[in-house]
Length: 261
Image (tube, rainbow, N blue to C red; front, side):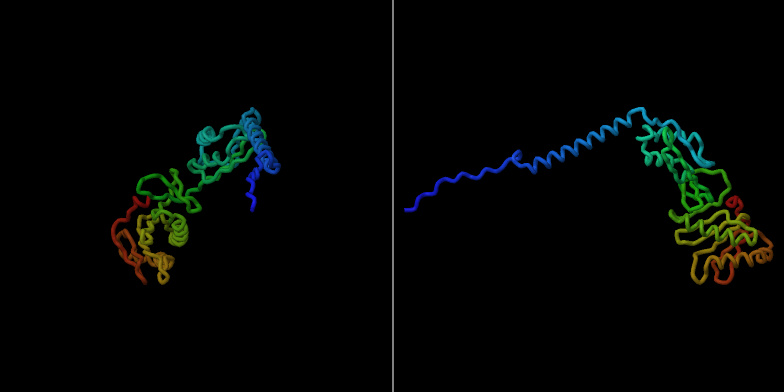
């Protein structure tokens, strides 16, 4: 007869403390964690110590539009801590929010100062808005919020078109200089039609730029023949419609010199 099998005792599983590899890994992790905590504590302690106190903000370069009071106000709100702990990115952002500041750069100047370099906007035109908020266009065609008492041309167009309008303005200004006229207002409609107000109040309706009838050609036609046509009319001219393929039409009346001023 077959003998019955004896009850077999299940093999015991080795515990955590019986595994040298796990113990070594845990020890390594605890060691690295401890070093990180000590380093963080040491850095925090050094930053709180009265070492390298921030005592001076040195502004390098010439600044014309940004006032000393504006810089001091931004510095008080943005510069916290000592020379080691101050957050340069946050501080730079605070200075770049000031009117007329296009870009700001900050560098640590050991042992107790920060060096601030400011690039200011150079305004070339006003940007017309329906809400009345003063905005200007700089030499790069960028719109920025600021007010100016300078005599500047006025741009009116869709948002995002300021760079293209500045390029056109420079082209128009160059061509109109041949007849001693200057554009003082430039309008780009939603349908991409162009209008130019001259310094004598006359409005030029140039229409849309087309391959067969480019704006430059229409403007040259105006510069060549307008004086003769105006003299023949013998009455004031309020506007000139340049949208015709081979000529232009005069709208008689008093020019709007208020819009040109």
